Length: 121
Image 1 (cartoon, rainbow, N blue to C red):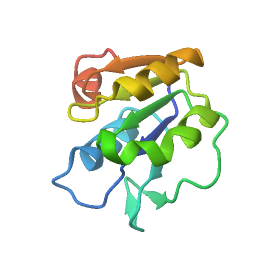
Image 2: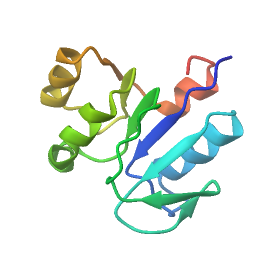
Image 3: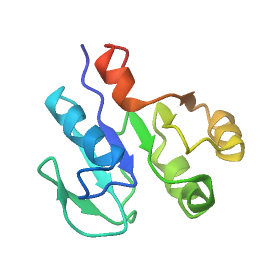
Image 4: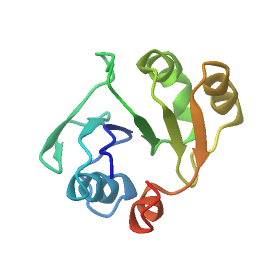
């Protein structure tokens, strides 16, 4: 299985959140991660950072913030130029999906945890 560097938008240090679980499962599965969030901390041994520096080697962006908060990330997401964006449950956004597709970015409405557990990641 190829390892897919994944940028997690909405990373958190709260162990009851899906973004936290996904970070740990991604790392356990051998996928390098970049954590982006609004609160400082560390998840799965990787610091949470603000969306300042554009990453140029991201395969997948997995979203854990709702559509109302995504607007401020549009430029960051598009400029990161991932191969795909995963819209986890509750993050679906037709506007961002259309924008991504215009830039040749695959979009997927799915759960990162399910994709990992079924070997489809």
